[in-house]
Amino acid sequence: MGKVFTQASVSLDGYISGPGQTGFDRLFAWCTAGTVATPTADPDRLTYRTSEATARYLRELQERIGACVVGRNLFDLTAGWNGRHPSGVPVFVVTHRPPPAGWEATTTSFTFVSDGVENAIARAREVAGHRDVGVGPGGTVADALNAGLLDELRMDIVPVVLGAGTPMLTGLGDTAPIGFDPAEIIEGIGVTHLIYRRATQNLR
Image (cartoon, rainbow, N blue to C red; front, side):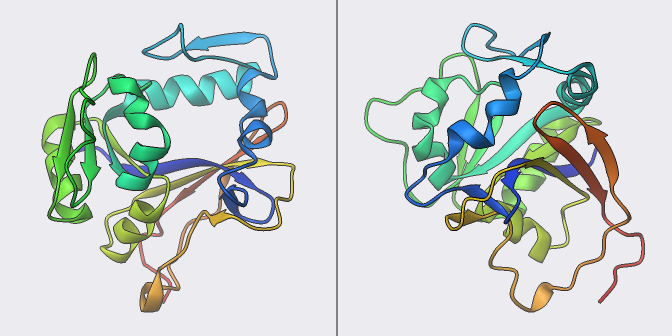
């Protein structure tokens, strides 16, 4: 069985978006800051152009991922990726509401899960098999951490301070502190990728 991980572009002060869902131009500038092309499953909409080091990091993720779990806020913010998630793998949306009228999946399988993140991850793992499950970003990450299900935390740190907005990690409650091993560090252009793996013996 594969791992459960999350990945997000994060500001120096820990936000994945600025106030009022702003700042994405700064948070994702690294995606097109280089010359090495890494196509997604929907290359016309998104092809990364980065350093070679970042390209290797992205290719590893693409090879590993077998399913995604996202929250309803992210689904709505992206308009459901117009029915085509860039990963090209099945997506499980944690929500208590049906999809918007007129929305439909196109090239990607979307499943709406109403009984929580734990069940969404379990269903995603069944589909992913030996491959990994990506979670979030957003509140689903805290839910996965609270449930003890997140194996790996990947933070793409961007050299910008947003001052406020949506934090990368929030809502952990009395689950914290949660221990991780020292980071694997990958330097790209305009971004530093940090990979934290859950400590074998959790530090509480």
